[in-house]
Image 1 (cartoon, one colour):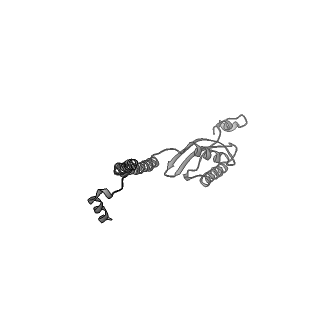
Image 2: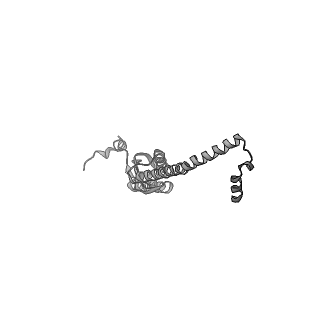
Image 3: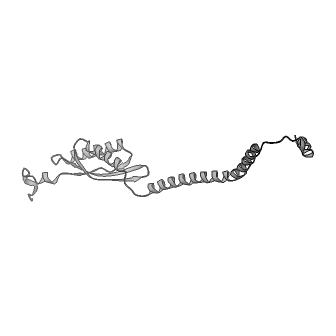
Amino acid sequence: MLWSGFRKLESPDTVPRVHIAALWVALGAHAAKELLFRYMLAIAALIVGFLVAKMGWSFGWQALLDLMDRSADAVEVEAIRKTLLDTPGVRSVHDLRTRKMGDLIVVDAHLEVDADISVEAGHHIAVAARGRVLQRHRVSRSRTPHLQYPMASFMSPRRKDWCRRS
């Protein structure tokens, strides 16, 4: 092949004529290859670098948010509130506070129970509510909920001993 090329250089009359359109296509392809190939590697490196930087930023930002003290999202808080309200004996839930600790949640809640039950029964309701939250949600630990008895029932006219002094 190389020897054939030298022979054609010695006698250029033996080289067949090339159509001018084919010559322009070949020159255009050669120029495009030289120009684009030179920059294609740089463009591909920029694209890969951008993707790596974007993923690093998103992972780093999420890790920073996990280190900060923040509450759980509203959907998760409402699901925990519903679980607490579905516990038998709980009349209402207020002061429900949550904190994220990594992937898990710490819950603190105030439960209102009926004022006519004993302290022991109220404690059993609180333990049951805590167990339901631990079982159904991504909660790392839940303090035993604070129990509150409605003040209006202590001051009702049917309870005459609420203001009696000994």
